[in-house]
Image (cartoon, rainbow, N blue to C red; front, side, top):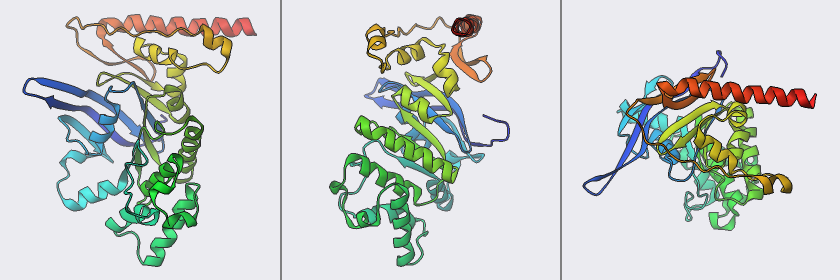
Amino acid sequence: MSEDKRKLLEVLHLKKYFNQGSRQEVRAVDDVSFDIYEGETFGLVGESGCGKSTTGRTIIQLYEATGGEVLFNGQNIFKIKKSAGRNKLRQEIQMIFQDPFASLDPHLTVKDIIAEGMDVHHLSGTSKERENRVYELLEEVGLNREHAGRYPHEFSGGQRQRIGIARALAVDPKLIIADEPISALDVSIQAQVVNLLKKIQRQQGLTYLFIAHDLSMVKYISDRIGVMHQGMIVELADSEELYRTPLHPYTESLLSAIPQPDPISERKRQRLEYQSKKGNGQMKKLREIAPRHFVYCAEHEVTEYQQKYKTIQNEKEESRDEIN
């Protein structure tokens, strides 16, 4: 991210543990740190159960953090006690949920669903202004004003997710946490929703935390990507860099699972199975292997990853030379 961009969100050593019974503890999020800059999309990707959705929900305080800090515009949101400050934060950070049906109240019309946040934060003005704003939002997400009087069950999954996006936009947020916003949709609809999010971001300068398990889709929408495994970020890099030069074995495993559009390539594709290694007592953390490219490793592994990075780069240069 360029130097002229400002950090909007800073996640510092975030932890969220769940207790299951008297002895068992699940470390869903275990010492996660990353930054998100104004106007960028930060992708958080990993298999189900890796802790990515818990990270998003803990940031927005749907879950109470076990430890760590989250700074929004430089302020630790976990220390905001006054109701006015908490309400302002809820307005500035919105969430789009995975299930576009369960997240919409079936007893409310689309108009009231979208306007609910406006009413709570006293943004709607007169009833006419409220209605016109709902119409604007519906058109912005690709629906029309005739949809305002209908109920959620009358819409397809893709349309319901568009309603969820309109609801999030209604309060003019600065950051939107999109928690698996396309996983419940048909493949044919997923690209439409992602393109809509990209379009809205360009128009409004929004910042996204985009959470998903599909690395190819995360690459398409994200500027930078953090790869999560067992509650930790194991690799973090610019989107193109991560896709072209994966270093951590878990990232390589995720990439190897992406289907190829070419039938011949798909038949030859080999899935790399990731085997988690037990720690040897040395402290692991995210370490910079190449500029802006971080891998979760011990200090003695840095040289090994740096050599791996150089090898991949050299192979690419040789391949380009052969083509030319």
